[in-house]
Image: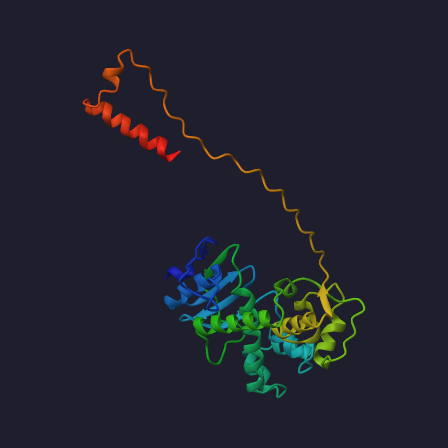
Length: 296
């Protein structure tokens, strides 16, 4: 039996609902608007856009992925809890991935839940910001990992809003979140934590924050936050060329105010008939002309 959710639906990027808010001051993006509508319908499936995908079950978020953020695999292998070979071995077995990882004794259930929650919040942060391009929703199989406690769309959007506000308080430069970054020439890190020093050393002008996060096995948002702190301290900058400001065109000379041209009244052959105030039509025309002249 085919249901309405089995057919992929396309959300046009022009849909906006200004009444919905992301962080208390910014209008909802196209992705957030469509996600809120699906949550209200208690939909189940996957919502996909160019910035990421969110999995819903009865209107609640159970998983999220984004090309800009590392997944559970990258976080576990990057921090050294698992090797790539161990991950591949667990992937090849027949049991659910979460059960396999916990059963191996290398990761306990709390660590796995925290790792998955970090990956979901990271991916949702970038996916919810999509405001252009196609957004599709379709029924989908269960992802490899699902949150032990699914998050409501309201909770997820509130968490993303708090993250955006935190980044702007540290250093209001969103371009640093996706562009390649590099260490500022001559910058000397005097008071820099070991964590941020590792980010600074990885900023070679060729890597984006997401690539630095994968290299270090860290959260993308945490890496972006470190980069904003380093930029605020004058230690890091965007390696992408900055377009020179466009010259401001000279102001155009002011136009003369429009002139109101009155009709040229014909010279009457009999002035007494034309200016006779006893004629109501003539009197009306004279009042209209006097009013127009008074407004000039």
